[in-house]
Length: 143
Length: 143
Image (cartoon, rainbow over all chains, first blue to last red; front, side):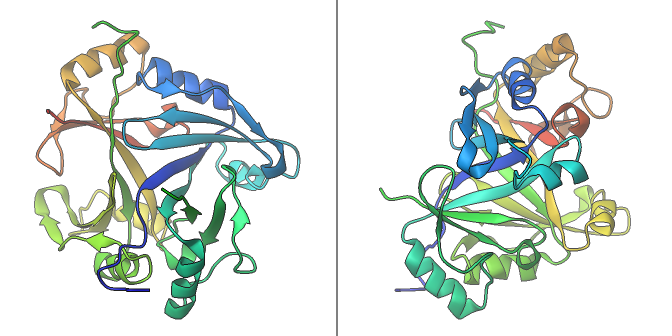
């Protein structure tokens, strides 16, 4: 793996914020903070609706639960105003990353296999207890 | 102000994560995630010690309380593992930004005047209740 000089995580792909109402939140980012926002996107297979706030160097993903089985419904029950949900870092080769994580004893949520994430790319999530209470997503992004 | 075509917030300058022990957390970002980390920096006047995780497009600021009056001591009591504390966006002219925020009825924490932040630049903080439970810092960065 050439570990040492090798930098594993690249860019911050996005910061995900769970909110009760993506349109209302996006309007604030647009009107109050003067940010560029996307149209709403429905991701039925992930149980969320999202709007992106496009910033110069990265983006914020505003997420709202879709359907009763939404994986973020509980988060919103615990945090009715909303809150920061996860940070997503880009990696180049998720299979190599997983091997390294296993070697370091870092836990991967689920069965350790990458899933297809909300952007159609392979992703894994790491346990918040291993990273200061912060949920980290790693997404494979090829050049 | 030329509002409309004008984009107010630019880059995500950093995401701040409060942790009990910055050295231990930084070691994980380095060893497990292969990220570049800075040396620890003591910011006595802000009641914190910090280590930066330098990513390709932005950075993470790991913060640990310094002294009994640290403004982040309470956050850590409520979140003993740590957690995401705020997002900092860059702006060009903080005085114009403040005028716009006042016009939009957005609250600024404190007396509405910019303070000198941890990086020696003028900053303001916005109320989390206005932004989905997320604490937002705006930092003036000149080209």
